[in-house]
Amino acid sequence: MMIRLFRNQLGITLLTLVLLFSGCASKPPQELSAACPDVAKTGQLNVLTLNTLYDAPAAVRTKSWADIAQFAVANNVHVLLLQEALLTDVDQIQQLLGTSDSARDLQRILNARSPEPYELRVAWETGVPLVLTTANAILSRCDVTRHFSTFLPIESEEAFEGIELKITRNVQVAQMSIPGYGNLHIYNTHLCAACSIEGLQQQVAALLAFVQRVEAKVQGNHVVLGGDLNLDLAKGVADQAVYETVTRAGFRDVYAEYRRTQFGETRQTLCWNGVPDIHCTDGVSPVQGMIDKQTGAGFPKPTRLDYLFLRGTGTVQTSRVIFNPGNATTGPINPAEPAVSDHSGVFARIMLGP
Image 1 (cartoon, helix red, strand yellow):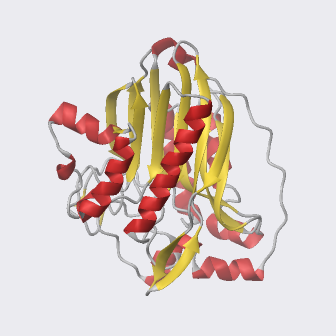
Image 2: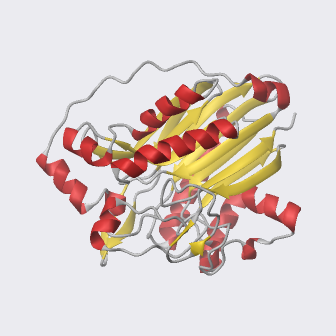
């Protein structure tokens, strides 16, 4: 959820490094051409969304890349939606966090293991360009025919002891064409944390307006919207009203739909009122960022903040929360799962309709 200490604004400690050091840009490697012929053959699309924790220590980050890649290959993931990807050209920050470009490093590890390469599309979100920024990113084995992004309304977010900061957020879209199934549009976003409910509603309204404009130009036969929405339905009617703004736009909550149709569970049983369970996507991992560790911050209350939504004729074959082993506060949740971030991921297997 990124509300602890100064994490949303990249942290007091790291900001100090930003002020002390400077860097220069490096030319990114040439993109590989991606394809996903099995989607065209079977109609099955596998999607994963994950907030990747920008200030993870180097050792944690290196292990997380391997665990994410292992899951992606084992589960034939076609598209990964990442939030909090890290970009820096400052040597000292690279050494501290173990990367200069975390999404591209993950792409490299994925492509070393995957039978098909992943394309990478990045949308800068907040921070100081070339020095220290976070970004949203899409990794796709399907050919991306077009990619663009837009910023959402800037809202004040409480960062630490009543201090409010203006933090930029965005939404990105990758457009793909799947033979036999038409256009596939994937939207990835990361909405404000610790902002007012009115601010969250404004960002959702802007996000949906962006979707409407894009779809009016080139309509997607299948539309996926995912990311860290910072929506906790257990908070009450205000957050539920924001959520319903999304569902009224024709989007179905993939995970909630699967749990309802397969297990008869309602939304009110999915990580409700801070009770840790297999449905929570925050507060059920032992991983902490460097700033939280330095300040002795505890683990956040377990919540469901990360979502995949689907619009179109597709059906949900399966959906589950992954990378959620539990921590010292919650006890074991899904102990066989590795911990790769402070958030858990949401995975879905979707059958595309005609």
